[in-house]
Amino acid sequence: MSDDVILHLVVVGFHHKKGSQIEYVFPPFEKEEPTKLPQEWSNLPSLALPDGAHNIVSDVVYFLLPSRDDPAKVVYGISCYRQIESAHLVAKTDDVTRNTVLKSVCVISTVPLFGCLKLKISLLTEAYFNERDFSQIDVLAQMYQNLLDVYEREHIAGDAAVMDISTRELVQRFRHSIIVLFKLLLLEKRVIFSAFPVQLLGDTMLALASLCPRVVEEGLLYSGTPPHQEPEPEKVQEEEEEPKIEVGVEASTSQPELTDPLADVKDGFGFPLSIFTTGNLFHPYASINFLDTIRSTAIRGYTIGVTNQVFLQRKGIADVVITIDDKNFPNIDIRDPELRRVLKLTNLDARFGDYLLKSVEQNYLEESAWQGSDEWVRLQFKNYLISLAFAARSGNLEKHTDFFPPFVAAWMETNNYRILAQCTPELSAGEEGHVGATLPPREIGMMIGNAIKSNPKLNSFVSWFKAAATSAASQMSAAGEMPNSNSNFYLEEAQEAKEIVEKPAATTSEPEQKP
Image (cartoon, rainbow, N blue to C red; front, side):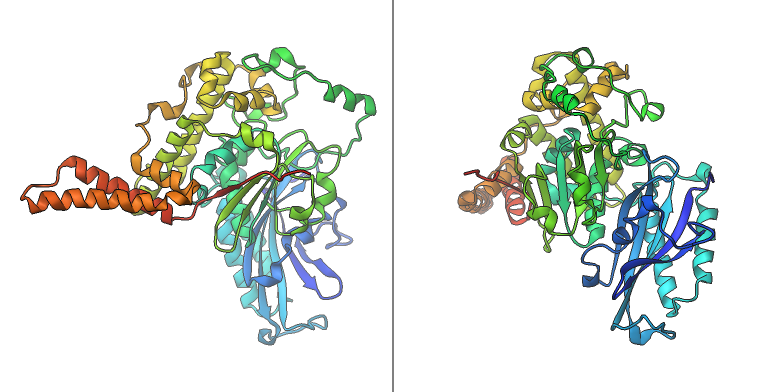
């Protein structure tokens, strides 16, 4: 097996009769049949040219494939597809029968390079299209060699996978609901993301996963589809009758010890958490071919990104559906009422969310600032996770209250927590209590603004609040007095509440009512 990081550079084209198909591969898949798809990678064409590709000029897709050397592991793919009017081509083949030509250039690697390859593959694809002659395959061979030279295993930056994957945008888009999504990630549920273009979908999912320390960098290696094994009926019955973990009781003492495929890469805190292992999938893009996969008995959970509406229309295949519409407005549809209750945010969660939002928004005004930057956001969630793990492992039920006891109990039943509880990480050095406890009390403006978002009938209160503060300041000025700190404070808080109300935020749908 080659130790090269870059496995293949592949071109996928759309044929009007045959659909998506492999056109060029460097190096060849097989010497005798260079472009013949390996059975393990049969989904590659549908991943490289996703559903809806004809609706946009250019887009970037992140995806995973099974490793050909070890089916239990994955390799990482990134593709950029473009369209060009066939009239602009200087050389046409007989199969060019439409007004536009759609092709994708893919890079498949043994380590995740999503972030650092995002811009590079866009430029590579543009250079290929600028030739206006797709038979010029020499440029592809040169691209492949350049990638080999640049990405040598020992010289790859530790943050290559998440470079240019913005957590700031994630916080701004979902606001306080980002904490709901983070908690959801830990519970290993069936989660579907839907957005278009596909780069928005992939960036959102990778940014969310990157909030769990080192999950994107090293924790996705076993996140693909495991070798299919139909469990015996007796085994299914045993799993159904397995006793639940009681709140405050260590998982490792209540259930059998679990094998951790990520044991060799964990740090002293037990990171990366083993969230996406043993049948819990992560796919930043999943084509329609995955519909049967996620219903397999070998799959216990998944976090997948889709563009095909069939996934959203099928009942019973998702616990939560997160959509981002064409106006960039997100919606979180928690279809399980009990899960909705478990994911309730505490006051300290809300205070933590206030702190994140204010820091991120300030960072956009001060681009060079550390606080509110992408890496700063990741660090805050790392501290949150350490304090959550410390509270869960302490066995102290009072500490669970900060994070909401039903959520802590649900997390303690998951594979990733049970594996965490088996090891002896340096959680004794972690902060006791919720990270939000060290922050100032929730600001009046944010509290009012977010309360009004939940109940638009209170909208007129902001105008009254600001008018009262403005009137107080005006009266003081008319009397020849300087407005004091209190009047300025309330004026600023009223303005902040107004800005929050006017800014779109994620919505959380009510669970479906069953007849």
